[in-house]
Length: 220
Image (tube, rainbow, N blue to C red; front, side, top):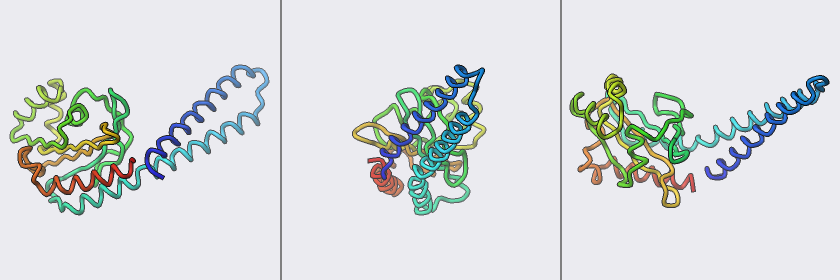
């Protein structure tokens, strides 16, 4: 079963969960003086089963993408000192996106939602030029670009400097001519990802395009 079908099932499960919660709220309010405990127990049990199914589908939903990212990481033999991290962000709507898979090999777990209003991932969602890289040679350059290109506030840009990340890479993941998500990588080693002008002819770009094709096959 492909990811689109999983998405449909996930939405139906959410609707069912909200429906049951709505029923529980109504039943409790309407029958406050004479609540049938077995109705409540049965309904809560059904809700619990739906939560388990929902969790299981969400797990299955991302397993293949996790494996693809792991294979890609191992294929590229990134230097340990570079501390490369990779994830996929999925567009939810025109104003928000969520981290769709866990960072590999380390980092934040999937599920966190962000607004599309600032940052390098935001830039990837808003532009149509395809893959791009960003390398910050100095701290001053990083702060300046975070402020003027990536829409960070001054205090946010100063906080970003402390993460030690110097090299970034993004590539849109397309579905039916629209951006479905973004493959995102960062590194603490300068030029882990080639300069923008060198990127199209790089081995990294070739490997990423092969990965993106497999991801797009998963979401078709």
